[in-house]
Length: 68
Image 1 (cartoon, rainbow, N blue to C red):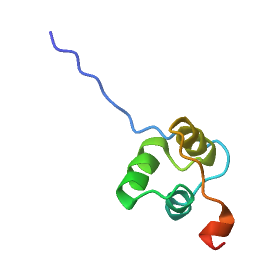
Image 2 (cartoon, rainbow, N blue to C red):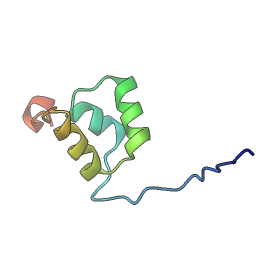
Image 3 (cartoon, helix red, strand yellow):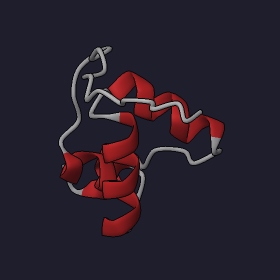
Image 4 (spheres, one colour):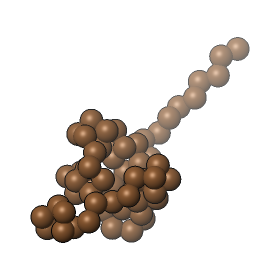
């Protein structure tokens, strides 16, 4: 007997503010491919992405060094 598992495209709840892809990649100095992969997997939630990067021990870059 074969079981069929259907996956639904459910949206994740946005926690905190949303990052733009550019802002996220610049803040953590990520390459385009890696930033897109993480953004697609975890969504744009700044809270979720900041927690993820802290777990990976990737500190954010200061705003002064970004020229902002």
